[in-house]
Amino acid sequence: SRGLGLAMPEAFVRRGWHVTGTVRGNRRTALHDLQDRQGEAVEIAELDITRIEDITALHDKLAGRRFDMLFVNAGTTNANPEETIGAISTEEFIRVLRGLFDSARSGPFTHRGDFYQIHDFQLKPGPVDVPGRVQPEIFEGGNSTAARRVAGTVTDWYLSNGKDFDGFTEQYL
Image: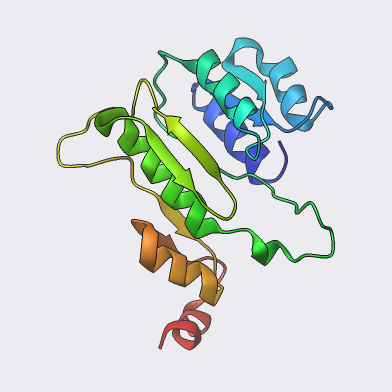
């Protein structure tokens, strides 16, 4: 609802797209201001991605609808403010996302990880079936060593950002 979570919906609405955005909690955000200006082109749902009941409620609300893009840009915080954000596992999140995508074809998905617990969940409807593509492609961005490792392990594409040619050469060669 701010940063990329606001800039991308603004750009999509300018192109005539319908945008469904999520916000954590019930406080008013800049995404609500965009909805006020754009009307039905912007739909907002409350969602805390760490709460399975929120995910289930959003699933039920959106059941039967198809989306051209899913962009996950969720800010995360730890229950213990003394912990670093590095304790949150992007790799586990992406493995869960892939499992959910696959569940539409292969049946209920269960995952018991360090950060996510999912029991017998099946995504319906599933991603649109595109010939030659097993499931939606997943992109990873970031310049850290951890981001590059995750991208090389569990994503389809890696996006490097903010580097000129010399910076790119220094990082990768």
